[in-house]
Image (cartoon, rainbow, N blue to C red; front, side, top):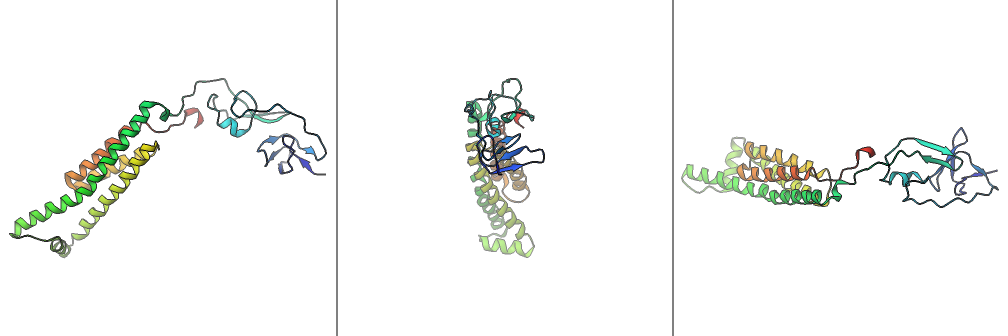
Length: 236
């Protein structure tokens, strides 16, 4: 004779050696299955919002009014979470207006700083061409300048600097957008881009203009780093 779930009557169950099991239909555990012809007793409907009644694991996990307990107890109705005393659990940090404002401010600042990475490429090449042209006494084109750098083995450094500044621009834009959406990890990306962007701007290509973009991204990430989504410590 087949056996069924004592909670919903489904035959889609998994039994354990001690005769307890888990129903794949209602996602509830039980102490012992019922025979196929047994009548399931009526039970009081359970609200997934109320946290003071036995419920499913998903209902328990979405209940912010109670402290998380990793223990489960069983009775004649099946398995249920063992709740502790009510405690004041802070909500998501992003729900406070000041934290939302910090995320928005940091996101906008990072997005504003992103174009400076692109501008730094043009500014650096223009300054380099002006210095070389003044040194040789005539106007030097960009192609001639790059060819000359290639002869001395320095063209790859310029190309690397250009690619990195383009990468900083893309990452800063994406990080700023995600900060506006409230993603907690986005400020960390902005801070990383800011630090690396300032270093690369002074060492390879970009100069002060690229450093300005890095500083804006760094400050924006720092402002927004305290305003992202943060789960209560009792849920971690």
